[in-house]
Length: 419
Image (cartoon, rainbow, N blue to C red; front, side, top):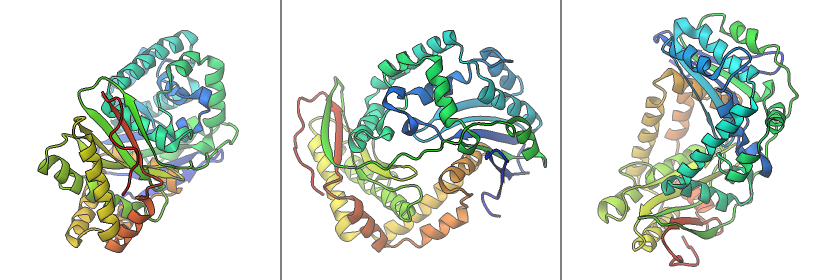
């Protein structure tokens, strides 16, 4: 059976509905994805997407914040939201017999939130505490600092949370202006998976079919990525670092070959960096590679937490692995293991209705269609060592090398990076 086996409906106002009927389950997951996040914010709006995400749960014209939470709790459902760099998602999971309740509540908060000034001030206080918590967590903060450094002033380099200054400044008119600019039918995808009724599209259209807004979908230009070395002094027991380069967009042909390269480099417990840095030398507890891919660009990097005495050694080992892959590529055994690892994690990650719902929404957002597992498997199975070497030489270049460090250091032990 094809996974996902989805259908797509576009309403007259431009709203897209993507669905997958899974009759073997008793749950239904529903999500409303909007193409609005930090990439769409001006400098003065930094953090406003995240504030809006919070505020949609604080009361509508027919429900209080308590009633919003209580309505789903009363039927054993779950409701939540998150803000990513390029989109904001509001979602719920319920038993199939409570689908109408989930649709009613999600569409209510999406269309009818009040943004009461008193509630906004309270929620701004919550987010300010969230910012403090984040700044007290260096192994998370370092990722944002790395993004800021490698993307320079590009909106995607900004923190999703915003800054203390911007969060404190937001008023209702700024919130409504942002909503009117980005929250439009053409920029919104409704995704549903599970034991769906035959009239699911009609049910959604009854709530969102008459929604009107100006079409203002905007794709910010790709950033100019240039390497740098930076240090943020902070009293920490460990030194936290991110070392990386330019990466790939979601739609780039090299996306899956790079995923294989990333898996071999530091994507699993048997990866090169995990084995070399943690298992063989005991230099770090946490060490891994990852990537962030957007609509028209990407970044890729290695994270490690180590002692300040071992910082230079860890950075040099990472750079050595970059160089080895550029020159020699990887072994056939590594390649085969990485292929199967990727395929396995992909399928296991689609075992729930909520993961399938999210997959459908993001697939539509990035590709304008449903990308199937079989399609990905076919691409992964064709990846060769030559593909890996070509990608490594394309991206592991000195002009892209960016190192960001947080720790109790006065200066870093190197001024340049070479791979």
